[in-house]
Length: 113
Image (tube, rainbow, N blue to C red; front, side):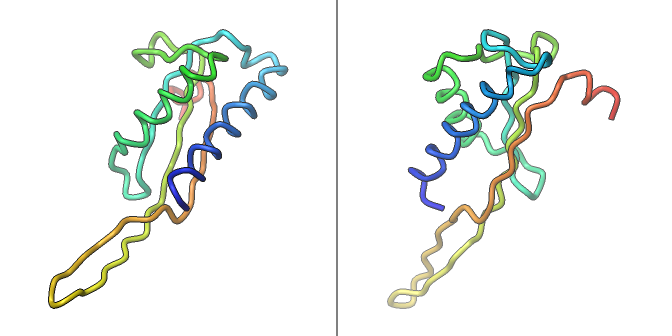
């Protein structure tokens, strides 16, 4: 998945959260804690920064600075595929997005898990 596609996908997810906000649990204007993880379990700080920027750009929710101050948690899990090629005896690698899953949950759900 190309980076432009990822951000289009993120925008769609944010709009989906806003649409889902019609349910009592999530409402526009609430504060969300944003986390991005790689499928390996490591933090994906670059994706997390882009998600936070997109949340701020959309202005539907405020980005929380801590889990304790959040009304909900937006979690994105990204699976990457590493591709390697050899050019003139030099190895060149690239990391492409293979799949993405995103969840918006109540912080209480994380404490009870």
